Image (cartoon, one colour):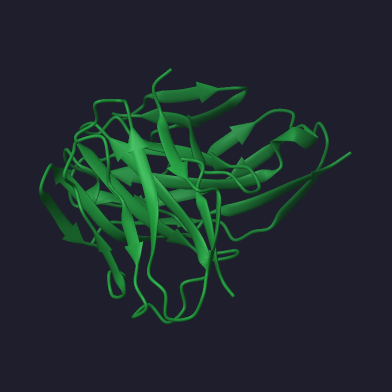
Length: 113
Length: 111
C-alpha cells in the first residue's frame, strides 16, 4: 500500500541553522505531496504542496521539490527561527478523496536561541 | 473567513459516558475526516465521509460513531466502548486532492 517515511526526530538545531527533513514515499499511483506543520496544542496547517514531478512547493522560507526518480519530497529551510519549532508531517494523496491520503509519522523540530 | 471549527477545545469524560465532539466547516468541502493523535504519535484515521449520509470506517473505528446529516457537519461520538479515549482529536475536510484543512482539535481526557 501507499506509505510515507520521514526521518526520525527529534531534530534540534540552533537558530539560523540549515534545516533538512527527509521524506520518501511509496505510492501505487501518481501522488500529490504535502508538508503540514503542527504547533503545540493546535491542528495541522498546510505548509506547502506539489502536484507533479519537479514541482517546487514553497512557503515561509520552506521549500520542497517533488522528485519522482527518488520518490522523495525533502523539506528544507535555509535559516530556521525559534518560531519554527513544531512537528512537521509529510503526506501524500492519490485519488480524489482522503481515503488515499497518507501521513508520515511526523518529525519534531526544536530550534534553540 | 472559511475554515473548520471544532468544539469544545477541551473535554472531560467520566468512565462509561458517551461524549460528542463537534466539527463544522464552511468551506463547501465534500469530504470530512476524523483523526486521533496520541502524545508524540502520528495521525490515525477513525472515520471519513465523502458525501452526506455516507461514511466509512478508518483504521481505528471501534468505540466511535459518526453521522453526516449535513454537508457542513461531521460530529464524532466517543462511546463507552472506547477503552482508552484520552487523546487529541482532529477533524479535517478536503475537496479533491487539494489537501486537507484541519480544525484546531479537541483534547479529550477521561477523569
